[in-house]
Length: 171
Image 1 (cartoon, rainbow, N blue to C red):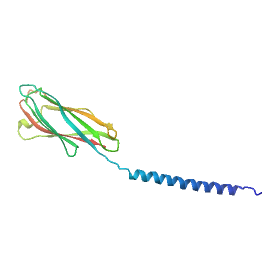
Image 2: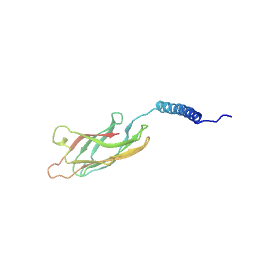
Image 3: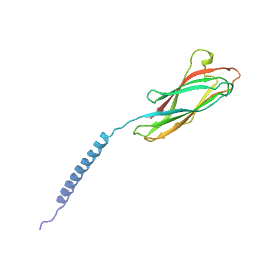
Image 4: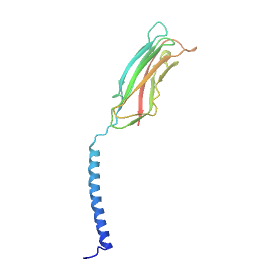
């Protein structure tokens, strides 16, 4: 009987290594093809907006409208506040319709003034829930509370009528 030498052991080891590498690459190729065929989508939107409450500071009830625009990426508001202490509260729902986990970086605010003194936003304040660095899993929803308040001022009083847009900055 022949001795099984060191050269033969090395050849068998190399052959087995090549076979295992081939099988491993075949399995990896199959897995990567599955991942390639999956649909990946990035879609974070304002799903809904509703007026929660309205507090009147004087005789007239403050008036407002809100609508979701630009395929759910922004909310457009119009406000008509009459006197100090008028307040309007909205609740918006942000939803991750995509397949990726997303992070809310910030909310983009854009007041839309008209011309004339009553179109200025001052002394109105707009506050909302702090969502900076909030992460949303696919399908997850997050509430956003938006409060508009006509603050007391010694310099400015009377009707405040303006538009306001709120958008999402995510990654």
